[in-house]
Length: 448
Image (cartoon, rainbow, N blue to C red; front, side, top):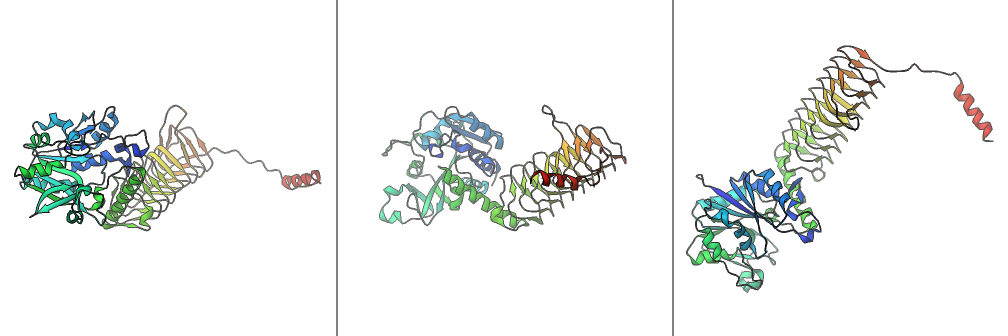
């Protein structure tokens, strides 16, 4: 496709009363990203340059969330709800000099792919004036039908208005439409309210365009891609569809999922090849995993970078800012937060490493804690290359452990430790011979 300019209009003014929530419907999340964020992201990836976001009053958070995914989003307020065409015309000022392609999207259809938007644009580039996105289903009863003749779309007929023959059609309206920008305003202004609801329906543009001799067509997407959300139950179904799609893409890309149905991905999870993921692993937003990584069961990752050849888990948690370099190891019941674990370093058991650097090939013993917070501020711990930290050690930040240093088990370290030094804090044990036996005998007598 030669370069064509493109803008999108995203309808997102509904509050979604069936969601039973103070949060606007389109801000509810799928795979860690709001629904409107998914739609804005798909638009951006399809080459949409500008987005007019149709919102209701006091919906600034919706605008901000869309702008996170697309830099050129502006809000257009719809104060009355008089139908989909009326909603699109809330962006009238942005349609006076419309782009070559104008795509009308819905903020509550988060599974729409950028490739599908691009396919609609291909039809517009081929000379069509109106392109409707449809789907085929075994249960078409509640949906409007797309009626075609000689490869052209001639009408969108609501189910209740279908003839007996039209009712048998399984090609249904997905709601999303594309328009050639030239003359779009005139087409929209021609839509009237000749219906029982007295509203302006965008779908009426199809018959108006045909009456004017314009070229109108429909393309097909998978039914699952066009799922809308009107309730929490719908949201759960959409989440399930996203996760199934993500799992299939992961496995196709070279990832082994031992129990796929138990692994959950975020919208932006990035995976390399030859990764093995055991059951019950959750990827929150912002995670990148390199090649040849093994992730054992019951791990949770967020905002983390996992380098090539790392081994993690079971029961490990990586929090935002965690970076594991090549062949690092993080073991069971270990939490890493805002810390770099350098190449070949090991944090094997029952440890918390926060606001820290663990040098290459350092070994962190079981139960080690970087005490990074004093109740007011966070402080950093720096552990040198090849250092050995004994079990049950507390490193009170700010702390510096030099390269090759050894910290004895059970220590509380408050001062810097130089390279290759041994540091420990430990009282000599006091042993009272036979005391335990005498104590037990005394208690037996007292309890007779």
